Image (cartoon, rainbow, N blue to C red; front, side):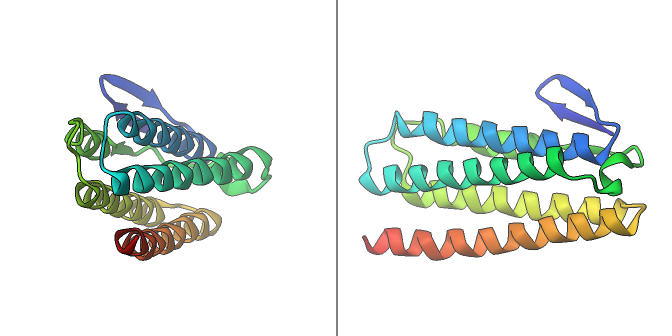
Length: 160
């Protein structure tokens, strides 16, 4: 499996590699939300960025534990495929201005959550083993729940 990250082409041979890459992407997102927080003045944006960073840290930690500690046979199999995370990186790039508002951040976070949901659905469809299908279906369902939680918590922040 190959992935483009900027100009870097990664070869991912196993499902475990895919999960490690997704973990790394969540870590990068956490760092991006933290970096954005240094340049915003809106208090709601600060709260939302803190929440988004914590959410990405939690997602990375969950994937770290599963991909490294599991003996699931699905982690050692994969059919070569290609995926592209540029939409995530481009979406983050559009937020690189000091006046970014909480609404813009939420829209971007929801778009990124949609990307993860679609990405997991694509992996689920491409899976060759029932264990892989189950794994990616579970990750897709988790992404949907996290997106719903994000929307709910962002509404609470807007009331704050």
